[in-house]
Image (cartoon, rainbow, N blue to C red; front, top):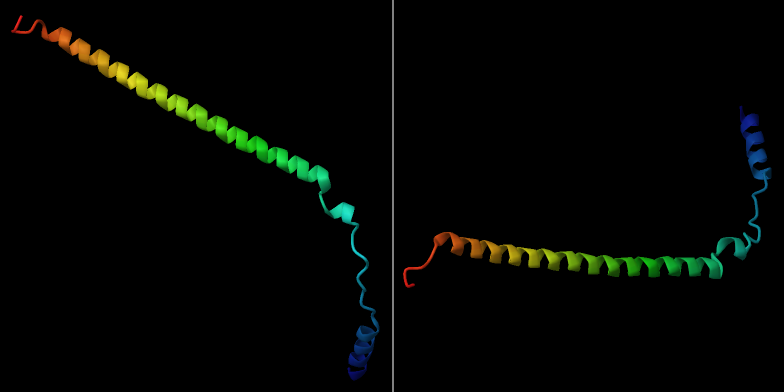
Length: 89
């Protein structure tokens, strides 16, 4: 058994450890100008979509408010019509 441990120790000590190489090429790792341009265009498109969505939501809200006001005016007029002429006339 001690011989086996001794051989294992010698074998582990004799195995060379890998040395790091120079690494990957920088062109393969960084996105470069094209990647920056694409990312920038996507960000600009997202901002423009948010602005457009905000305008549309505001427009729908204003239309709903105006519709409520018109409905309130029409219901007020119909209530007056149902009461008939006033006593003062």
